[in-house]
Image (cartoon, rainbow, N blue to C red; front, top):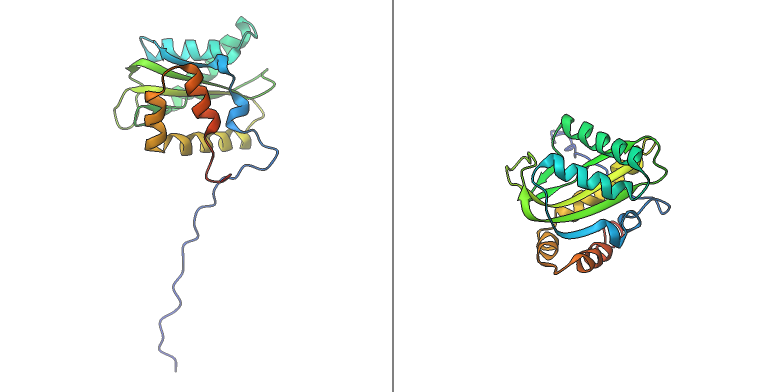
Length: 178
């Protein structure tokens, strides 16, 4: 009889979320007017209010209020602070026709309840239509990859102004796209 041990089972790697060719790229979410350097906020709530205003992008008070409510509702489920001074507040909002992003670099970090206890100074906020489920996850995956890069975080922190931040964000490439 054969006394060889049974073949080893290999754990399959977790499938990576990949963006289909027609999916939204992060750059499509931003505009230069929704990127700010040296912004200030005195609290997490004030920061979410400022982000809701940027994400509503002139669509009116009702949209701004709905975006703010969706960001707050998501935060109540758990902080969207990632650690390393980064947060990705996000929410699905009824009435939005398209996904929108905004990026702030704060002059003074704000406590965001991040798992590492560090206050945040780099914030990428995301508002997506209610029906965006898979796309929402893909975008969050891209953001997590982007902000997981220590060198990239440092370049964002040392960029001189909002146009420089926008350029850095627009030049970033997912390893999936590379």
